Image (cartoon, rainbow, N blue to C red):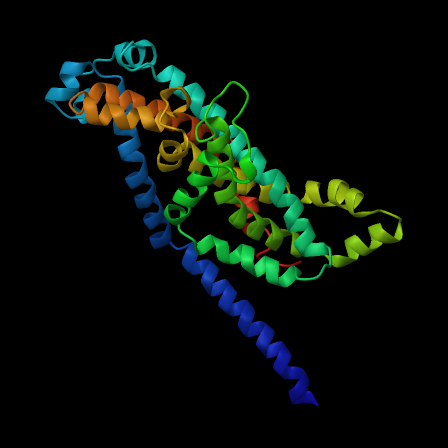
Amino acid sequence: MTAATDLPVEHVVAKQTASSQARQKLSSPWASLFAVVIAVLWTVPTAGLLISSFRPEDDVKSNGWWNIFTDPSFTWDNYDQVLNGTDTDLATYFVNSIVITIPSVIIPICLAVLAAYAFAWIKFPGRDFLFVAVFALQIVPIQVTMIPLLKLYVQPPFNLQPLAGGDAPGGGFYTIWLSHSIFALPLAIYLLHNFMSQIPGELIESARVDGAGHVQIFSRIMLPLMTPAIAAFGIFQFLWVWNDLLVALVFGGGSLDVSPLTVRLAELSGTRGQDWHLLSAGAFVSLVVPLVVFLSLQRYFVRGLLAGSVKG
């Protein structure tokens, strides 16, 4: 009897010792030094890009950005030409990127939270099979689905008519919104379902005893608790859509009126391969928005990644 009671205690002590050793390894000076090295390797190219974007054209083409410390010279002409120049005009494409990105983030989140709640807390026939099917859709390459999806846009089924105004169904902002939403839904449903399934069932049962239905449980209990997970996926989706080039090229119909910033930057790198001062300024214009979004929502991002990993 004594051996039976001592074994669990020894097991708990061993687990606590192993956990303490793991924390010491992660907090060791070598681990801190490794983290600092990674941070420097990530920060130095970004700093060089920022400095180059403010340097005059002759300096950018003649020497490296590190010469700014010995021969400092700055100018706003690069950004003025990139944002307001007739040849570049990135301001219009910057607005297009915002118009594309915001609905492409909101639409899959709104659909995914509803689907995740249904898979987690509503019993219906074929629930497990459908969830496995949704999970399996994550391994389907985007490139495989582009041609069939584009055919649906260009030649919609059931003889659906084009949009009002005579525009072809295969181009426009709405096709890019739908495409990004379709590609994001499997991962969004999977992540939000995993988070939602970790919520204690007693909380749901007590709400049902008080007379709450699915709508009240979802809106008053689930949504407030899911804020970190929604924010974490929202950051992932925002960065993916903002930096996307392939989906915008394929489903935008080839029109520059609906092209995002990445399309214009690709054209600048092809037609202005020697204009490094303009490319650096344009690249930093494209970089600053996702950087601000990530830094402002970083606390939600970390909480969302850790959500559900530890119970209690």
